[in-house]
Image: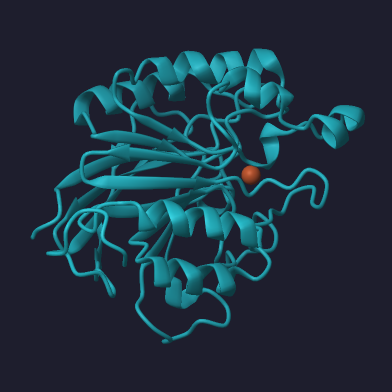
Length: 289
Ligand SMILES: [Fe+2]
């Protein structure tokens, strides 16, 4: 059975607050209206300093996408950095004010796709870097076990799994290889994230310790959608991606907005082949993988 054709708008690192660029946000809304994706993914760092007014700014932007489903996950900037008491005891207080019904790890289902968002921020263990705990991998495993076999299986996690050559964004998630192996077993098709503030399109084979082991799947980070904190080749630029899923392929179409630009400009697409792994796509819905 062929899988559903699906288009996602993938944005990240809104950084609402001092670095936020309202003109970039307006350009993002125009791109959304022009492309009309099936869902929008915002992979963390919605704010710069986890302040309620910054979450309010991010919320206003996301409201432009309604009623299209929006999948979100927190990033390291969505917990307080300098408000130490809050960071230690109630790090997600402002996040919960923004997203009252969302648990920190969450599942969103739309026709033909299951998204599992995993919160990689770690306010008590890391300042910039993130963490994925074994319980979160179990959470993902259970969510995908309940998903129809023909669903695209998409993990959303803020931090990067593959080092950026320049070192931007710091070290990747510790023990990323363990997560990649588990995702492979779950039949995950793609991992979407951000954090490094530049397009960073990889395969799971690029994760240290994985190499040519097992089935490969794309791990895709997009830059900062609406802030002036772009890094590396995207210094002062903004980027987002459109992901077009067809039965066995993923076409990633990057869009970049120049520092003095108006709209996001389309870039050369990058194609990935997607394998369903061990899943039997003709099995009844909800059958175990
Ligand atoms: Fe980040």
